[in-house]
Length: 377
Image (cartoon, rainbow, N blue to C red; front, top):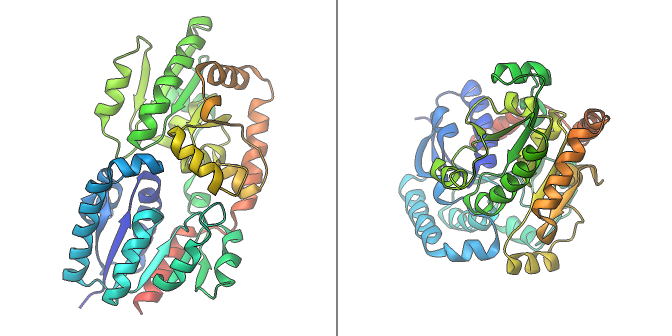
């Protein structure tokens, strides 16, 4: 009888990482039965999706509270499934608010738990390490600096490495990437990357568009592009785009080629900023949550950065605009700066090299897949 694994992802970047791991797992051990929470990327790898992660993707403490009843109903459904299916291993990917509670239920049921992509205990809520010790059997972390945090508490841990070290590949130069998207290589390309959660897109995309409108009004040779994040309902983007006359090229595939075509990018904080950095594209980070969420986070968060590039290197390599600094004027100015500076690409390449060095070992997806096989015995 083949082993069964139940995998849980709560948003697009976690699902993308999980899909790479499952792809490697299918090559190493193709007979494992896979089911769980995810989206199209996991479906494509043969995972039986019992709940689509789009039902869970929400950011911010206050924002989560507003949808508490819906999320709790999904949680109860998943617990019932675990009781019924009794998988041989539960693989939890990031999404700690939901997943640590699920780990507790799995512990009661005697289901082993592998936690892939650590909660950001080094940034806030360090007390979660004690919870993890009680309910998680093994931590598979992405960053070398996370290992000692768990070793200190005698929690089984391995640094499998960040899958983006292998996954992010630049196929084209900026000019070639523009041609592949039918964009004039002489034109400057501006990328608006508003994130994958509806809550962040609703807040950030209108501001990005207004900044782009102002730039295009002054510099007619600018093309504006927008990647459609996996799991995000297109109606969310369509509703916002209906409010502008600006022609924006929305692209739903070839994300790395689209990113490579950009001369400057404004991106919501998240895994995507790491991908942009590893492609060597000039960019900066913005983020805004509800005032109450921000007030709470300011008291809880113990590190000076929100952007992953800055966190992993411990340096402010990439500009971050947060909360009240996220204005149309500031976004416009930062974009213009990256479009006009002659050393913009050189600075982005230096960031790429520093981030790559800080990310540690390659083979992340395969290493994580191997850990799953080890735990299945």
